[in-house]
Structures are given as C-alpha cells and as structure tokens.
Image (cartoon, rainbow, N blue to C red; front, side, top):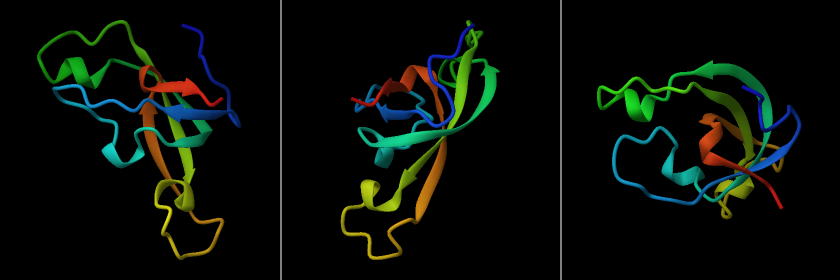
Length: 95
C-alpha cells in the first residue's frame, strides 16, 4: 500500500463521530497538524475491537498539532505541541 501522506505534510483530521470503537481522540477531530512520522501499516483497531480481521492494513502516522490550534485559549509557549497516532482513513490533506 502506498502512503497518502508524507513526513512534513499538513493534514486535517476528519471531523466525525461515528459509533463504535474509535482510536482518534475527539479533541483532535477537525484539527490540522503536520505528519511527523510514518509508523507503517497495521490492522485497523476499530475493526479488531469487534472481532473482525482489520484488513486491509492501514497506514499509521504520528501527527503533531500546535497547542494553540487545538485549544484556542492555550496560554503556553506559541510553539508548544501535542502529538497523536492517527490512522490514514481519519486524515485528509489540509486545504
């Protein structure tokens, strides 16, 4: 499988709230960040939680978000960030 995103690319987490076991943190949905690392491909944990095979495997990325982009009232240093592992099917290219 070819990765849709590259290290350094800006991406946006999809803003959805589907039912079920979701690994994407709610507070990051709809937020834009930058790909820091591509971890590789893994079986989809959202399907594994229900006893399915989780195939095909999905690319997993480490995405860095500026704290001020996640929490507009953040009062720390402007460059402070938070990172999270996000599966590719939750990401879109940032417009």
